[in-house]
Length: 300
Image 1 (cartoon, rainbow, N blue to C red):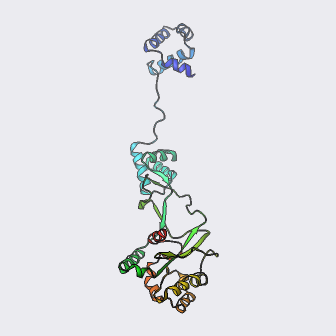
Image 2 (image 1 turned 180 degrees about the vertical axis):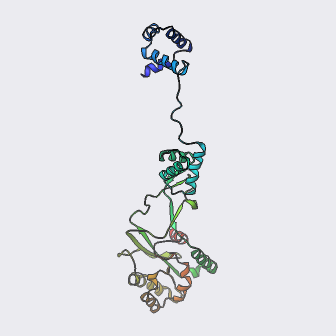
């Protein structure tokens, strides 16, 4: 079949005209094929083509016609930019309903790729409310002129929870290359779900505590006193005296009656804890970190 098609396409216009002329003289296809030394099927298809189209030139197909118009392509890209969490199937159904022409999700994916949009996992970060931003801005303005010797007496502490299971839920978004951290491509979240590991650490200028892992996987007022305040904070206060300042992140387990009582009997400067609590590294629950504190930790 392939060889016959090749021979047919390579017949020059004069030879094709001769074949058609002899067939119009009521010659048989077999005799004409034998005279020109070509296959019977070639002459037969050439004669059928002439009777159908009126010419003997070989037809060339441009392939499957496009299922969308340029306007449809722009509409598909616009939908993905407006709602980047839509799947290709959802966009295909919406476009089909709008245009009245059936479009597959594979066609939508190709059009989005042509518009430089690709399915990628979104960036996730902690949700900051206006109140969080105002409190952190106030903290910076009030304490920006502190000297190093004063900051050297402050122990910054924080808990972080690391999830042991993925929380992606297989969510993908459509975005351009190089736009990973654009605000429209970021999903805000407050906490991890499922099992996790909770850790604690304190940092000061030029020093830091060991990384403490909570065996229970979570922390309450009793665990906080027995595992943090007694073995760590009390020792720092004893070494630095009354000038020692302790900063926690104002989480519920830090404000229990037991924790407050232990801070008082340990002569920790509780007033300073209250003053600096709004600069905490957590928003409302353990497990979320402020980028400024993360940078300080990475330098230690």
